[in-house]
Length: 244
Ligand code: MLT
Image 1 (tube, rainbow, N blue to C red):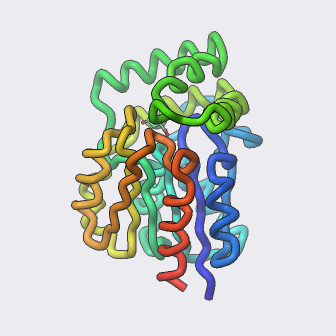
Image 2 (image 1 turned 135 degrees about the vertical axis):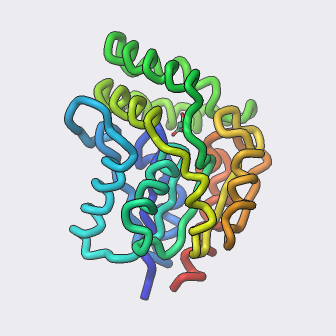
Image 3 (image 1 turned 30 degrees about the vertical axis):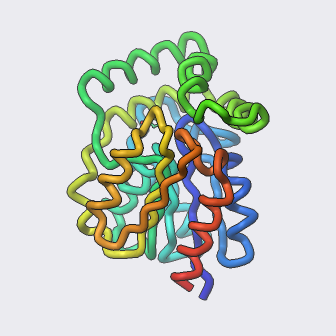
């Protein structure tokens, strides 16, 4: 049977970052690429949304589609959510992929910064995130249309969603102890020029996962799925085919 791959976008983006991967994966598996609550075309209640809240939304989505086991693919915050899915329902993971993500929790300093960013997004809008993140998302030679596509995704996020997710990201636990229990095929993708999740962190994560395959994207920053889309798509197709 064809596996189901669930593409989980990072912060503060939406499903459009996966366009290349959706096209590449569709011939070999069922692909689900939602907008998380508060992002793209989805809404949610005000407050603090834990990674578990996002995970439960996605588990409900998969239940509604009649899917039991699936392969979550998490980009950055999407990876934090993947770890929450693993904490809640480990049996449902048939495989996994972590793209430019990390298992560790925030430092106290980082938590403080996220709180400040949440307050300024509620006051001034998502342009605050656009200004702070756009210069840090890509390798220096990123083509303009690619950067603009990502900028548009940031502009589609709601201030309420961005603030609630920032607070939830800050509250996430350390997932490092879970890595040894990843007893399914796992792909780890790192951007060698990533200014947000340094490649060394993603590589250390791959070493801690028993059945991990590491793919290093030499010309990518934090967005390998749009900066080197063929490499990411081919690696995901290979993972999906190995599970069918
Ligand atoms: C993301 O890309 O999802 C965020 O940059 C993650 C983070 O800030 O930790």
